[in-house]
Image (cartoon, rainbow, N blue to C red; front, side, top):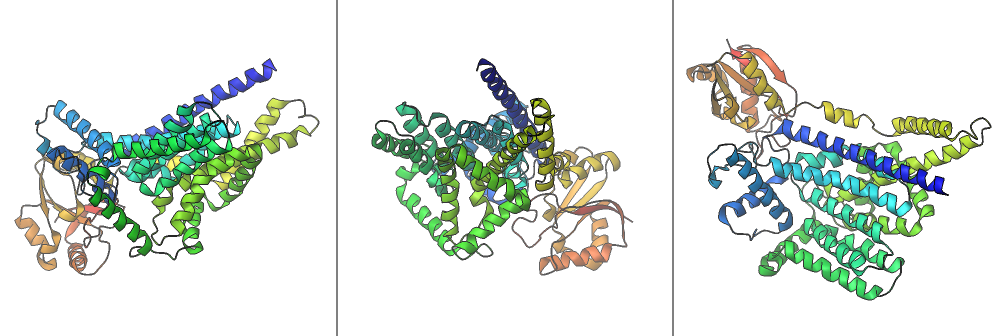
Length: 538
């Protein structure tokens, strides 16, 4: 018995160590990608949080006046924005809040002002990975789930990218929901009133304050109280609900102080879910649900459904109560979203997290089954180490076939934003004192070039195709940047005509593959990495 206990303790310790290593790797990937893409925003929805945070910092008015997004992520971003400003001032720059010129498109200015906020939200997603691994361990007594779960979740290009790409409410809500489930898993059945009701209730309040549609997170916390029994279940439930409401009001104070605006905004939000939006509308019911399901399968690989089903079955046999509690929220969330008309993949972000956990547990279940089968073979029957190694190698092979194991490598090897690559290329290859003409639509942050080069930012649509080169020379330009435009209608047709007209009059020097620049859009470079080339005027 002592030997088995020691062996289990070793497994837990090793699993914890691997969990820390995986979390560190995920964090490093996020930091690397954030740093390589700064100072350029990567998602247009970030502006709804960052601009409100900047308004609070500049006006000292803590009322966000809009509640389409909760004030909780806005306040967090405000704090991180203040930290970024203090770092900016500490680096010897002008001490003036008004020096913060932009926290959105075309680029952050100062360039590192939102770095603390971006890092915080990336770490929140990594924390969600860690929490799901810990919850699986505690509910189902699988130490290996501590590291298998975050490994599987790292394979989701949607989740990790959602964490580092931009400041968003979904990452905050997912992390708070995962933390809630972890606390529930660790203290289910406890006699402590605070650990089974007050603390989970506070975390439920923070989750709902992160994203209103996550109100269903209270279901697993309530189920844990009633399923695992104990005294004062009714009063524990009341305490949980009261704690959730109180915490929500603390982090969203203007839900009370400006109740009319808050209720009106919630009404508009509810209405948008019933009506949908252009290009984002599906009929309620199965037609809507299958889009979330198939997007999840596409993210992890369609064959991942086999270990996911195996994981659900294994969890149900191992601890049906834990499986029921853990599954209740993602299922409720999927049903809730499917009954509306509005479709955004990110609304079901926690379902991606839950599915990754199922896959991880399914792989462990397959390992256990194979370990038992190998034990029936005479030579291997008494050699547990060989059986473990053989089963592990086989499961790794299966994972290679059914899961996108190349994803982490792709994220590590991803290149910086094309404009950052161009900045470094210009510094290394163009002569000092040269004048570079660049389109305003490219949203190019030219400050790093100011010491050695003169940059001219112009709206290319104001030029005539037949006179573009002469006009550029008249401005004194030696080099020009030519984007790849997204379409050929309206303003973009003029820009494409310019590109075609000057193809034989500009000597190409370097080009960057990426996303076409949408000149007809409010934000021409939505997701970064614009495609463009640099050429010399002949």
